[in-house]
Image (cartoon, rainbow, N blue to C red; front, top):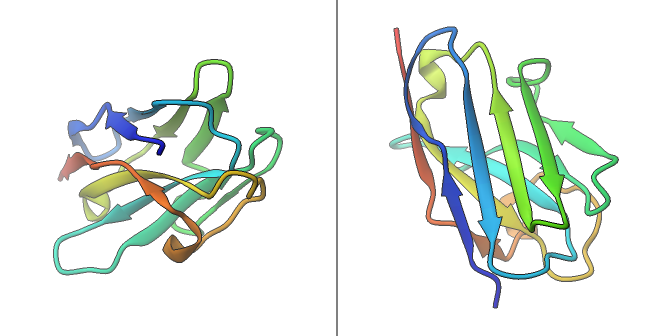
Length: 124
């Protein structure tokens, strides 16, 4: 059983930046993603990266502003978020696919391991 722990959330002004990190409890032979969920809304795809780290995909809402990365030697993943907007206030979740599912994926049902989430608040 893999456990994920996110960190790096907080309060930032619109236009600012944050870097989220995700630490896994063991080796993660699978693709990784970040999702977010605002109050009263469904969980929303943000970004995904394959196991090798050489392919990524982003939602249209964050493309060009966010960057996903991972370090398999350290069992960690990061999400660099730039030019943040107030409407991006949400709880951000790190997720992993099942062992062996190495390719990127953009829907929550394709991920089996989830962190507890970290709050990101963007003030206007």
